Length: 425
Image 1: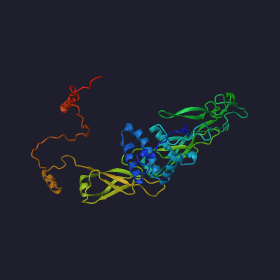
Image 2 (image 1 turned 120 degrees about the vertical axis):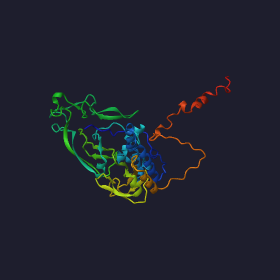
Image 3 (image 1 turned 90 degrees about the vertical axis):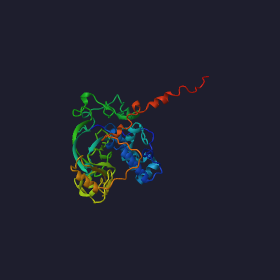
Image 4 (image 1 turned 180 degrees about the horizontal axis):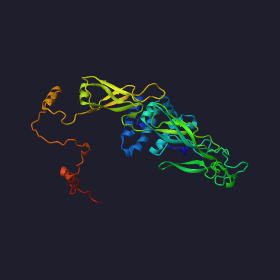
């Protein structure tokens, strides 16, 4: 398994979570919620073109993490008092919120709240992060995934020494016996940090053996590869960007406690539902007849396979883009027996052209429908032709074309050449 990013950071510039959401520090919980919803809709990966999706995913994660801190009274108080250092796992704080460091580094080229840097020995092997793509169905119902992983483990034959029995080691000439070497790592465009990594020559042991003295199984590398069966549990209601930690399952390094294997949830787009937080939205497609006369039927299949039935009363007209809120049919809330809400956006399917064949049918329908508005009183009338199915994006496309009356703009730009001129001294 490839090693994940190092946890050693230098002191770097802070980013204000309130500024990230565009609210004041005195903002009420409702103001914070409104700001988050607005930004979440703006940067939701499903709502942007494909070429902007990667950037939007980063922004959406950062906005969501900031909201999760500021919406919680206890976390907000900790942040207001100590900043992001309150969530620094090396200082006893919670670790999940520190994911904002990596998100904001890619967004802004800086981090929130530094962690002490410097050269360290490998007391713990690096944690390893990798994405896990999860469908919305899996996140709704929860899922257990069993898989086999190839990982690096301590050689069982030499017990991690890298040498044959009773062989005395020599000090590694490259790291002078320290087992570590310094390097520079890029964490964002234009931002690098100094880090200590295991020496390549001695694999971090500080000891060096001649080839004839090396362990035959690991060839002196002190570690070997093996396959191990692992199990990944995705809780119901898990969200984009959440981390599922398999403790001690990262690659092993001699003289160090194994790090963690961390899976970061990547929520896959869904054909029917869009998710924001604990809520879901979906289109509600109804016919014109249903919009006017009411209906009672299954309108969609939920993420767990259940049919969702809606009864809309006769006489209550549905209008395009009207929102129907279904309480408790959103995503499950973790560590809770409740769910978010489902928002149905009304989409009316109008009949095809010429769906009525007889003029008498049109006359009968016209009698049933409300009468038109009173005619507009004008003195002069022009009967014009129109083009159906026009594209609103074409509006303004002829700007600057002299055929559409813009000659005066050129005249205006050139017309003041004969006016008073400032005298040159």
